[in-house]
Amino acid sequence: MKFILTCSILLFTTLFFGQNNKTVEPAVFIDLNLVPSNTIEYVEPNEIESIHVVKKDSIINGILYRGQINITSKNPKKYDFISLEQIKSQFTKIKSNDVVYMVNGAFIKDNIDTFKLDRNYILEVEVTNSEAFYNFRKSDTKFNIINILGKTKENLDNKNKILLRGQEGIGVK
Image 1 (tube, one colour):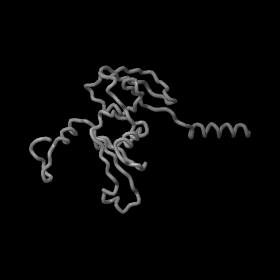
Image 2: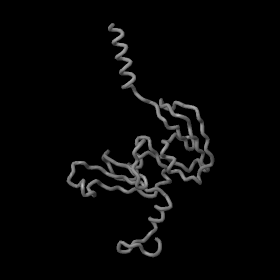
Image 3: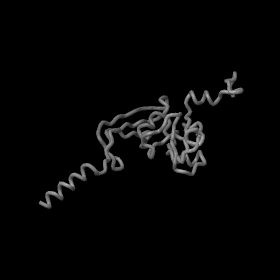
């Protein structure tokens, strides 16, 4: 009886508390570099040479992926993928770990530890401290927001605008 009880407890804990190394996303490779699936959003479509889809499940670094997407760019040496931690250390002077990341004004919610961006895609990195927000000034919660601006048409246009007394001026820089 003890044996049956021990086996059932072991089975129960394994099923409900075991490590889950499955993902419903495919593995995404850009020029043979494994990148999170949301990195595709920041790749210029005109730079893609070909896309090859493998429908078989595969295990990479102990994680089960539901297929693979292999993207080959026109210039494979162009991409230099760096993590958010590398962006924080190379583009800012922030030392604390309490950071919220954004790309082009959109919060990064998934794959924060594995998220990578192309270094050549980065136009500017803006840092805002939580004290800049009125509601957080008296709070004990202190954090920084890192907004990474990419080289999108909109960001490049805004970078070249000249403002006069808070109004848009005529002309560009």
